[in-house]
Image (cartoon, rainbow, N blue to C red; front, side, top):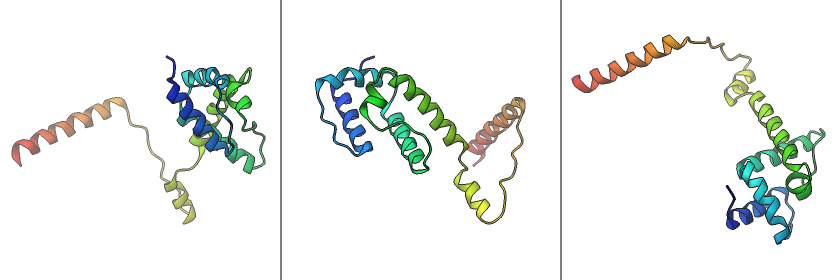
Length: 138
């Protein structure tokens, strides 16, 4: 599925805003953006650019925030996919706001026990019966 011209131009404007540089739009950028938008979304672009910026702030190795490096280079889409996977992995490892709040007062989040599938189904059936009873009696 190909992206529309308006989507491509909007993605280019978003990219320019994210990297805080004004890259002029021309038709040579159309095909790389179409190829990018066939595989990725603008939300993923925003996530990866933010991840690269955070790595640079931490003085960790990161790719350059250039059109050639992220969108149109010979291996840019494969590298972008790797960056996206790494960013998602790091986001999953970050503590939740609740865990950070508990840690600030010296407590830990309680361990959650895994629930078997049959127990989940039984609880769902009981909840449905309760809902039906409430509708009939209240």
